[in-house]
Picture 1 (cartoon, helix red, strand yellow):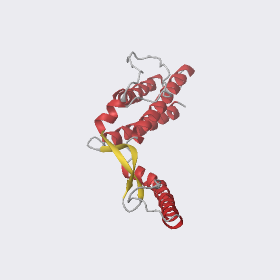
Picture 2 (cartoon, one colour; picture 1 turned 45 degrees about the vertical axis):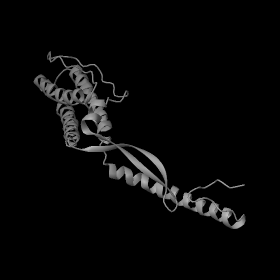
Picture 3 (cartoon, one colour; picture 1 turned 180 degrees about the vertical axis):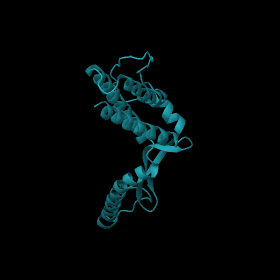
Picture 4 (cartoon, helix red, strand yellow; picture 1 turned 30 degrees about the vertical axis):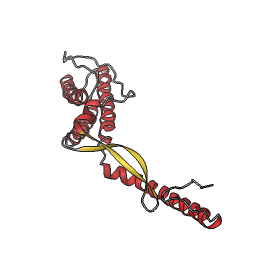
Length: 192
């Protein structure tokens, strides 16, 4: 039983370490963090996304773990003085490593430890899982801008087609039905 929970803890800690490394791999990357949209006229109206670019350090410095990532208090059997407060990426990365290291110490109790040791290790496992959720939240902020833009582009293309069709219908209505000339680039204004 001890081997099973220890292998689960080790596996979760290994995934956390991989996520931390992937996040660190973005150190020299600028990320499109947000999009705003502008309507532009160039032989027809088009909605175009404008990305707000921020760098890695800003994202990491401003990131806070989600409020749902609450860690359970741990029993400090080996007097390691582990601080389970997570306020930022550094805290999450450091704590993930510490929990994995301290969990290994419980192997000293042998193959038949007291049931309370299993309960303690379950808390370690649960906390590592919670840290993984927090790391996932930060990692998703580094999703390549191109893939987010691709996701948005499909919707924008559809809206632009609808806008183009509406502009065409309005132009036909204004020019053909009422024989009214509109100043170039102005839609919705009808001269008296």
